[in-house]
Amino acid sequence: MNINGHTKVYGIIGNPIGHTMSPAIHNMISEALGIDSVYVPFVANDDLKSIVKGLFSLGVKGINVTVPYKTAIIYELYGVEPMAMEIGAVNTLQYTEHGYYGYNTDILGLERELKDENISLTGRDIVLLGAGGAARAVAFLCASKGASSITIVNRTLNKALDIRADVAAYAAKNGRFDLSSNVNAITFKELGSIPYNDITVFQCTNVGLAPDSEACVVHDSTFYRKVAVGVDLIYRPAETMFMRYVRSAGGASYNGLKMLIYQAVSAYEIWNGVAVPDVVIYDVERSLA
Ligand code: NAP
Image (cartoon, rainbow, N blue to C red; front, side, top):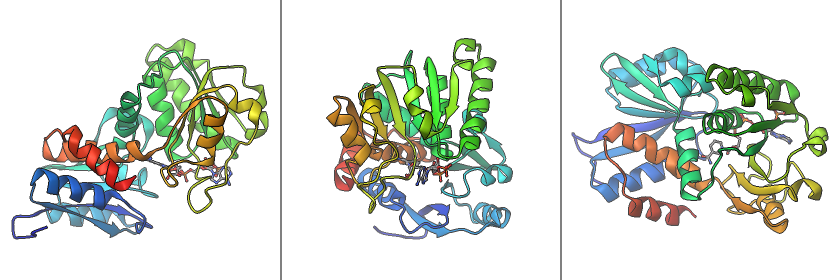
């Protein structure tokens, strides 16, 4: 990497930030494409107003935002893409002359992973394990892609109820009254009452993340027998306990590595106005797997 007076600077803000893989992904893409830019991590604090003002004054062309600032950042932006506004979370800022414009490329990343794996959400019964920021984005993606039901399962019921209300309202606003009355919120104790078979499940909790690789939020084999497709948003370890349960019961399982890479690729494409070639994406995936 040759940093010079013309090198464009990009980065990610969050706290903590030490675990982020985004610099590795973005810098690998720049190197492969011969684009003169560098991507660096910034540990942020709650004073997002000053942070955004400083980055803007320095002309930083693109910024990713991670935990815990994906919602609070919205108040500092010039504008936000409609779906990101519905979700209430932004992870990508693009410099414009009026201020930063916000996108949610987490959702674009998952959409691209599902397309790669030939996983369709249309007409599917969806179960989300977890009701944090990631589950909220997945719930909106499922609603926008024609799911027939969405069941949000969470330890803390109130958080599942909040997503339920917002997604049901979004479905009704878009004329999906069938889905609007089929968004459910339950706790793990009620998992046995789910009336659907052949379900698509997204594992959106932190449980099972390395080094707690043997942990899983659900152990019930009756549940796994109903799972046709299981996607774990976790990407470390490469095969989580949840994925193993799905596979053992005969379902297809996927981890969240492609989602992670594609959210970075989508941000890169927004910032640079290029399409990152598949061969570069494949090389990035191979180096991180
Ligand atoms: P978050 O907002 O902090 O939500 C965490 C979720 O996990 C909540 O539903 C929480 O339940 C649940 N949870 C945590 N510990 C639990 C336990 N011991 N038992 C049961 N439930 C538990 O986090 P997030 O941003 O949604 O991220 C969730 C996961 O998705 C993380 O592992 C993250 O790495 C992954 N992720 C991956 C990508 C990707 O690109 N692949 C992108 C985003 C996120 P309560 O509400 O009850 O606390």
